[in-house]
Image (cartoon, rainbow, N blue to C red; front, side, top):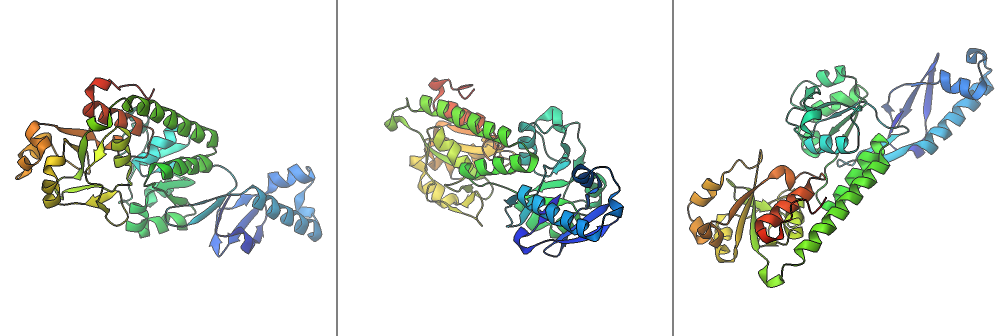
Length: 357
């Protein structure tokens, strides 16, 4: 059963034959079938012939039990969601959610994924595809009990989200902005799905893999560390905010961020910088690194040919590299692979591939 709102505000119950409908804080939520629960407590005799006092006592006990067992999470939009059992039919509309759900072992529970979700390939390939740009009826027809989105969707497509919620489908918006938040995010996914132990195992694997990479990178002398400009969006000359996961990956790989003075745009991981500031730092930039993917469809040749970029030392020396954005911007275990790749580009002699296990 799902509870939205504050449990301390109380419960109002409406009995309809064998079903119980719960309204909390004015929010109508899915029905609970109580017949089996009643029989567990009272035996097989007909519950329909119970006296009024017994009904009242039972409902009070049920309310207390649900309150004791309910778990609570608060999503990225500030919505509180209370639930007393793991969700079992999940549609994920963000590639990171999809990847992490499968990492948690939710092969049976994930019944649908986003149109552009791509990992793990064999698992996403055999699932129905959905989009927040379509009518929500397609998702409603699939009968999920949980739809996972991110703030870009929940804030940009409120009518879509409202339609799902009016249909009684729980919709949770999540997206961490740092590695520290990523651990909390994994734990939230684990709590929603009953995979808390698997979430802790993911955290352990990440921390151990990161420690292994850092031990290797520590062998590079400080005076040999490369100064790097990390491009996020070429056509807008944007980099990453200093607290972003991409910059975490760069610094964990032993790189020094030359754009540490960049400021986040609208509280995102992206930071405005501009060509003038990049060129002003040109002689400091040993390596020009750019993420490549749906967000930044750029080629190495475009960067090398960019007007004015010959003022950048890395461009003159050909030290321009691309890295898959999915390995540095998605809050998944594959960030370890991204860190390894960056470290191997900066310090080829480290031979880091596979160091994280």
